Amino acid sequence: MRKLLCLLLALLLTGCLSALAEDAPARRAVQYPGLDISIAVPAQCKSFYRDNIGLSVNFNEENEDGYCRVRVLSVGADFSEKAYLEKDLENELAFWYTGRNYNYLDQVDPVQPYTVAGREMTGRLYHASLVSPKTGWVLLDRWNGMVIRYDALFSPDHPDAVLTLLSNLVRSVTNPTLAPKATAQRGQAIDCAEQRFSFSADPAYPWKYAAGEGVTVYTQSQGSIPYVMVYQSEDLVVEAYEYLQEQYTPHMQEQYGGKLKYHYEYQDFQIGGKSLPVGWYEYMVGEHRVIMLRCLDSTGPRTVAFTAKYIQGAGDKTMLALDAAIRTFHSTAEPLR
Image (cartoon, rainbow, N blue to C red; front, side, top):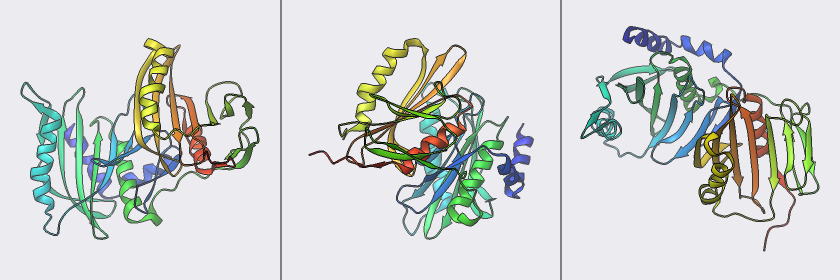
C-alpha cells in the first residue's frame, strides 16, 4: 500500500494527475476570505473558513471523506519551514491523535522537499488510524511574500480525488490562468414581486412561488427533490449563526428524529461569493440520504433563507443552482428601521 501511495504522489509531482481534472464533477467558485483568490471546487463539496485552519474543502460522499485546506500563515522574518514542520506540526498531530490512553498516530515521515503543481515546497507526510487508515500531507510554500500552508487528508486506498483537488488548490492560489474554472451556467432572471427580490437560474428549470415558502426552483422534476428554495423574510436576523444553532437545528431534530443522521452549523460557509452561516443536515427518506443546506444571508435589508435539497451523490446541478441564486440575488425591499 505504501508503494502505491508513493507512486500516486510521484504522478502528482510530475503533473500527470492533473489530467484527471478533465473528468472532475461540475465546479463552483469559492473565495479565500480577505484575498483575491478564487478556487473552483467540486460543486458538492463543503467549503468553509476558520481562522485556525484556513479555507477547507471537504468531500461529502460515502466513500470519500478526505479534504484539502489552504491557509495563509502569520509568520515573522525568521520563519523556518523545517522548524515549523518538526515542532509545531508534531505538537498539532499529538493534540489530535494522541492522549494518555490512546495513540492513533502511526507514523510521521521526515521533512523533505516536494514539487506540487510546479511549485517547490517543504512538506511532511503522516499516517494515522483514527476510525480508518488515513494519510495526511502538510506542505509549506512561499508565494508573493506569504507563507502558504496546504493540507491534504485522504484514504491510502483511494487518494486520487483529494490529490487532484490539492493540485487545483495550488494552481488556483499561484497561477489562476492555469487553474480549473467554475462551470459555466446559463442564467435567466426570476422576479418575485410578492417578496420584492430577483435572482438568476437556468431557464430549463421549472419554478413556482408559494406564500410562506418563496420561490422554489426544481433542478430535475417539478414538485420533488432536488430543488433550491429562496425566501426573503420580513425580519433581519443579525445573529444568524446562533439562530441556526439554537432554533433551526432543534427544529430539524424534532421534525426528523432518528432519521436525522448528521447535522453541523458552519459560521463561515463559502458559497455564492459570500461567507454565510449555513446549517448542513443529512436525513433518511427510505433508502436515500437527503442532503439539505440552510443558508442565511443577512447582508441586505432583510434576512434571506436559501435552502437546497438533493440526494447524496447527485447534487451537482442543485449546488450550482444554489451558488447562482446567492451570487445573483437582488432585493428591492426597503431596509428595516
